[in-house]
Length: 554
Image (tube, rainbow, N blue to C red; front, side, top):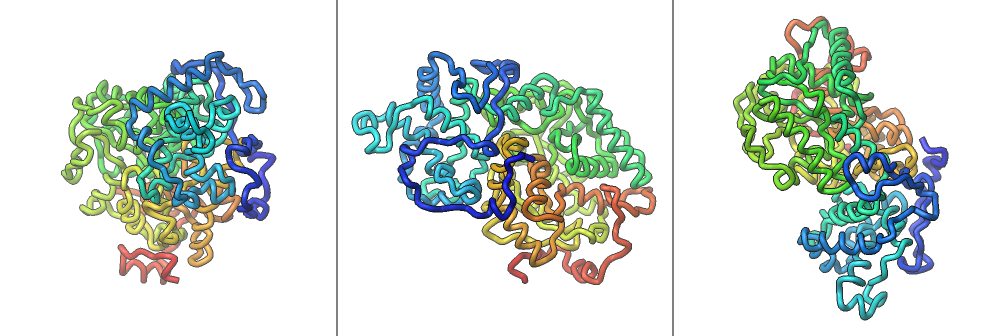
């Protein structure tokens, strides 16, 4: 963690005093712990992005190209023409403030420029000055200002304090999607070579090797086989997955977080166990081993470049459709952008479950099915057997990951699976879940180590909701279906709500899954002892397997 991270009791003292000066007259102060390192030149050069160089956030001179002002103005002009939504969002905001207290970064920091309305004004004010007659004539009186190098620094600081979660857009009476403004603001910054290295390095590695962490094909294969060895120790069953196999029915793609580090690896073990039990005809690809898409946090062009990899590999291997793991931005890109980026994928088939025969018509264009949709169908059709008492040591709550909740509408399937795999499930307060879910505070490429204060502040509202069910129901497990969440939440929980572990849904499913010819199960997927038998409370809950427990039940 950052050496500058305050203690929780200090961070929780959030000041909401009226600023001494107006926002245009308040210069941005780039404070350590609240930003990530600047991108290295080699990483943006690797994907053909402009103006590659090494620069430091702490330096006064960011080595902008001589024609930086022209680059931004032409970039903004082109995007106003290309994206009609941007033109609309620039013009229709009445600054009502309905979004102000909906942003987790504003709630956690108290910084007015983290209000979504004001973050958008950072760009809108420049638009007004250069693209509207009123702005050119009346200037500051109508909220217009000139573009300066100080404004560029301000843009960079605050556009990378937005996780593009879209919670604010849910409450806007005009339907303004401030996340889209952030996305395009970052695109403009990338024209000047101004990204963060946590994003830039991941993009370069994914483009060159096939995954965000730069894991070479042989190492990727060995990582999966290592997880299979762990499964064999726990279940007595030897799993032999295939890699790069032509003619398989399904290409399975997940985020690199699922095969690289704890706790994502336990979710990956759940995938492997499920597929083995089903006898599923699937293959992994060592070349397109990344479902996540950090290009989405860079530009539409780079998002398209990375999204194309898995579809090119699906075509090369001759599979029928793609099955995707528990990831967030992977699914936002596929569900909302694939059709205009790389689709439709006419060389694939509309997904049909080879086990149940269910046809996933909603995926007719993308040819990709979310693992929770696929598994929910299996459970609903009684194709797998589960023993939820194996998870009786866990008292679970569920975090709706922003990209799949607000960007895909995947709300019921995860809860259905949790209730089938666990006996103790408790919802967080209603205003913090489903479409209104709070972000983890580390999305959109902010999950670095040097910006830990930003992450802890951004995750504060979610942590408060977890603390609520921790205190009411002794919840000790936070489940989620996003690899960034699984990577970010352990630090957040350790900081704000100690003793709450983080899990993926398919880890819970792997614990509960009864496999053919398995040995007597005494350990869960983490190698911890399973409960010896159903508790009294478990037996009572099992009478109502689909019942949901909420904080309001207390």
